[in-house]
Amino acid sequence: MGMVSRRPPRRRGDRLALPLVQGAEGIAMCTRVVWPDAAGSVLVGRNMDYHRDLDTNLWKLPRGIRRDDGVTGQLSWQARYGSVVATAFDMISVDGINEVGLAGHVLWLSESVYGAVDESRPALSQAVWLQYFLDNFETVAESVSWMESTAVQVVQLADPASGEAPAIHLALDDAHGDSAVIEYIDGAVEIHHGPEYRVLTNSPKYDEQLALLEQIDAWGGDKPLPGTTAAPDRFARAAYYVDRLPPPVTQLEAIASMLSVIRNAAQPFRIPDPGKPDASQTIWQVVADLTTKRYVFESTTRPNIVWVDLEDFDFSAGSPELVLDLGSKLAVEGGIAGNVSARFEEGRSLRFLTLADVTEHAAGVERS
Image (cartoon, rainbow, N blue to C red; front, top):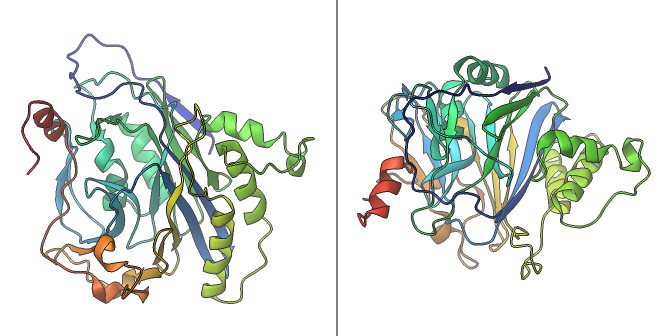
């Protein structure tokens, strides 16, 4: 399936006034790549590149949790599927996989423009955009169908602490090897849907990124494989190397192979280039096996690789939310490693950032 562009109609209806930072400079760069034939599994790897620590934790979220859109509350749902997600500041899901093998990944795209909020259309805040799909769908095709049929709009929210308003696009992939890239450009949603859309980085927008790839000699162009940390160069290297991975014999070999690809697209610790605040270091990496439902996490500031097997969790409705506090547990000395499914703890719930939180913060009311 090709790209779908849905431009919202102009109406004279009410618009929500959003306290956010419009046109915020890009400060995060990331890479995501899918390997659909890895020892009988579909693997996806991603780098999270950001200019500061995101206080990321891993959460196990059961079925049956009630959530709403985080904007007006007009769109609400009860989670059909449980999931394991990586969060930013425990306010937004930025990466994750659900129990039936649908995964999603939030990446930066400076060109994102979501448009004026139209209260007559369903909306999702950026904080729950990914989580909505993990809660409700089994496949990429189901997710794309819902996007096309609802004309849902994504609402940009400023981080109350920093004032940064994320400009993001979303990648989805599933255990069948299907893939989608969803972007909002000039207020219109653009969806690239099909198993061929296996790699995603950042700017420029996706159709332009694909055109740049054709300039590389491996795709019929006349330019050598590039080596910088710019998003088009990382895109080219990830696409090049994932296509040249040898067939793995075991799952561990497959995971190691995927790590080798995303490490090649990672960015080193450094002072940002002059005039380029969007060039950001890699702070963590994930490899997800969408077939066996294994989720592997590696921090670049702590030496231990950890993973969870979703089959180890009870996702039934009414089971507790669990969290693995990566800040305290992934220490240089005495830290955890390997399968950490049993190390998750209960005691608090994941609360997604809402428009009300942003509005209250602007008025001097602290988020509870």
